[in-house]
Length: 241
Image (tube, rainbow, N blue to C red; front, side, top):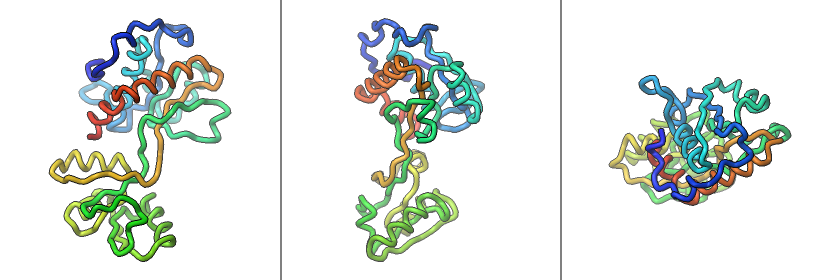
């Protein structure tokens, strides 16, 4: 899985193994049931989070040991120190901060505005139409903004893909959907020249045991280097366009 890592600095691979990893490996807990972040393809585990784990291992000059677990077992494995980190579309949870540390985010899965009309913010919606999935987070966000700004037309749909269809086909001025759905839709419709504009934020982060300060520092710094070098963006582009 190391082939995806493009442009890693040669000096990064020469760095000594941090003392924070006494087993000389990076043990990563991951739930393989959430494509395109982690899933089975041809009997092998693959996905965005998998690529990120291997990129982080290369950045830290550590082999990666993926431990595939159900979502309910991820934090238990970290608590019992069976793994060093969790990389599995985690969102920070305030009630867990007494037990874990969260790194800086590597992906934002929040709501995005997308369409053909040049709308870049929800504040610009008055006089326009907005498509979204009925009963979703986008629905709730649209209801909030309908009380803050002048009237705009709401177009709820059964599925987020239908809302995106409406925006692409100019049946609505814009659609409000989560970033993952929007990016996957654009992959399937490459001829649609639409831009994404972030509206809300849902950060995906890496979790480390609260007592493993050295591990946290190494992992957070390594992730920061991957973000600065553009490697994280390359991985995201591979899986989500």
